[in-house]
Image 1 (cartoon, helix red, strand yellow):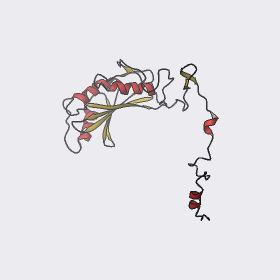
Image 2: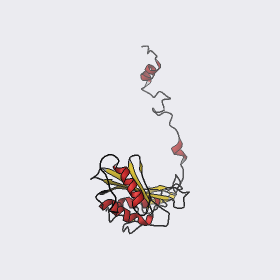
Image 3: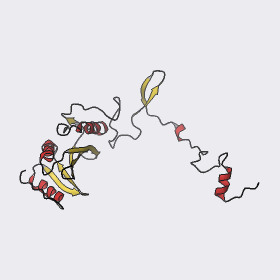
Image 4: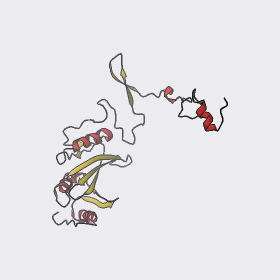
Length: 215
């Protein structure tokens, strides 16, 4: 990889994309998308590539800004795991994308960027993506008893269960989801509806209607 040359000024990211796509092993593609360098690689090459992007001074991606998931249920490897890297030194961003399925773990990058633990926990919680070598793989946004992963495309909009606090039992309880009709009633007396004139608002209503009030 020592022959990768990064020019300065205009075209630097384009040169990086070309160098990565033609000279670095394990790269599926590297191209510019909306002004950012997007690199797709194989799952088993992730750690090697990420260490290179962090440590090589020509890339110098010192920060992992975030990590997120994307779900494509129709694919054999339904999940894309997306890493957004920032180089403060060069003021450029690099996005790394890999794919995986529900059962195959992705190598954790928390040893390269300690902040990755938060992002990997979030991706696990919301998508169910597993991260090998992550010592703290717990839910982070949902609670411990939550069922499923809410950002999967096949997760029902209403969820599987609903929670409430039971004052008798003095604890949070889980129950099957039920849609209560009371919450679907419309309050036509609400001023937001603009249908009725509420008590005390007669003068304003007449003004809006262009009517004169006779004393």
